[in-house]
Image (cartoon, rainbow, N blue to C red):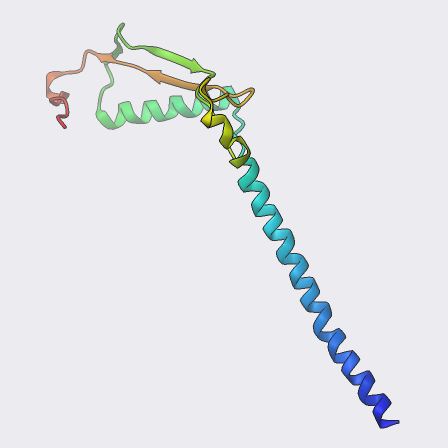
Length: 135
């Protein structure tokens, strides 16, 4: 009878150790699978609301003008202005690694656009001007 009770005790100990270990292994497998999926597919490009982005950029521009003390400056005619480039958004993730090895160029991520703006100011008082940077 004591032999039988010892056998049940060992089984109970094995179960008490095996169940949490299996749960931990399953959790680790899920976390590793998620990390590998993110590395394989890459991070997505951010989604932007154009009106909200324009308001945010306008506020930053105004903060720069205020910090520089340039209330009476105007945009110069020789600034390049807005530029939207659909070919400057390469696909992310290791699954697109072979795309970068092609001679025909790297395909762009669909429905993405890189927008940039380059402006020049005129009417800056001479007291506010600095010589150009030399490198």
